[in-house]
View 1 (cartoon, rainbow, N blue to C red):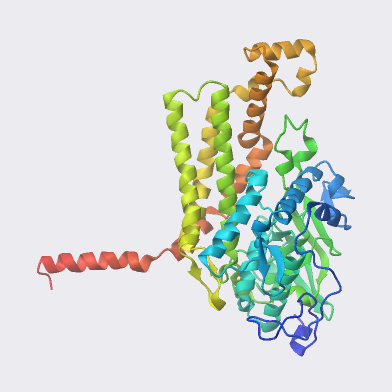
View 2: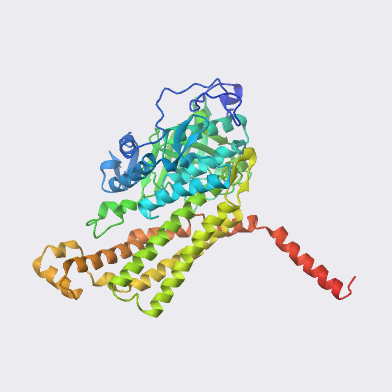
Amino acid sequence: MLTESPLRHGVELNKFCVREPASRVNDCSDRRIIPERTALMLRTGDEYLVSLQDGRQVYVGGNLIDDVTAHPGFGGPAKTVARLFDRTSSDPSLTYVEPETGEKTSLNFLRPRSGEDLTLRRQLHMAWSEVSNGLFGRSPDHVAAMVTGMACRPEATGNDRYAENLLNYWRHIRDNDLYLSFAVLPPAGSKSGASSAVENAMRVVGTSSAGVKVRGFKMLATGGALCHEILVGNAQPLRPGDEAVAVSFGIQANHPGVKILSRKPYAAHVTSRIDDPLADYDESDAAIYFDDVVVPWDRIFVLDDPKASYGLFVETPAHTLGNAQAHIRLLAKMRFMLAVAKRLGDALDFASNPTVQGVFGGLAARVKMLEASVIAQESRPEQWDHGFVSQDRQFMYANSNWSMEYFSDFATEMRRMLASHAFQQPADVSAFDNEYTRRLFLELHRTDDFEVAMGRYRLIRLMWGMVGSELASRNNQYELFYAGPPHVTRSRMYGNFDWESAEARVDEFLAQTAADDGVA
């Protein structure tokens, strides 16, 4: 039996919210304590790297990592994230003035009120995607976009105090320019159900005046080793009986008892930056184990409420704003992949073939269709409460379905273009240090110009990194399930399609043909 939250007895535990006039829409109470900290507003890359040295518990296999910034599997990707923060902090066009604080803030945290605001958010997502050419999957703007969407409609928590917590949390990550990951699924094979039926999935095991104690696993924290905070919740529907797992909260990555169990980081096994040019874009993935973690009450957003825990994602603009980032990132990725293939075709002299040009033309059309869909999502903003808007969910979920079903075919076409070229290359760049193998390498490429041969080699390695390597295999699987399992993604499209207006045309046609035939 869960004990009652002390918040229900009027205990004041919130620490995140900056003091603001009480007249503000969706305001927190003016009695809140301003935390003793200096808000960063716009974090630099160097500040980000220093912030990761915080005692977090990251495991790779059986090894506990002392400093992720110095680890070969995480150091390069951490520097990629640092470049993202530098991109925003150095470009005023990627900021806005937050009305609550009067400070310049990353567009990542802008709660949109118009199509123009959605366009501004797209510019931020595209600028960040271009840093990694869309190859760094869940960059810091993905989950932050979701929390920003939740903050547009905090009453979805179903509880005034928890709504206040959620708004405070958004302000906290906004004013400190934080990187969030999320863990919002049970372990593979786990079934949603009453607490007695959930064996290893994270669940509430008790409460006290200090907070809510949780134990068990949550999946799948992409970037978990590199983030500041982890959003924990349920991105799939729950049902009555799921109360023990129906909890949502935000937790620091270095919070006592939070164990980050990373999959094998591909960057730890690179030969060279020429042979593995994409290593710094492996943000990694992690299972999160909560070892009797006590979550403070002021960080709880939902407790003991299956409907609200899922509703935070789908009954707010959260899911829409988050998926908009995913589609913009995919656009940058597919455009880059296509350009690399074209450069490779030119270098290997097959791009002039009319048949190959037809293939390139078809792929280019797909890229432009994706771009059109991204723009269409914001061209007809969907209205939410409190004057906020999001991208149109019909276009949004159509895009999610298209991406899920088409990207694998897109990557397969790239593999066809690469053919066997990847297997005809030396094992690694050490071949160029040996005079004899270097001469053979030039002969293989039918040239005396080492720079020409090296250019081809690098393009082949880059293409293989995107479509044939172990990292590419992970990315292909990732794109397939980015928005959830295929049946879930299709169900979202079914639930958001405008069936009423479409079927009205059927009714009108049937009525007209019946009248024409004189049928009563």
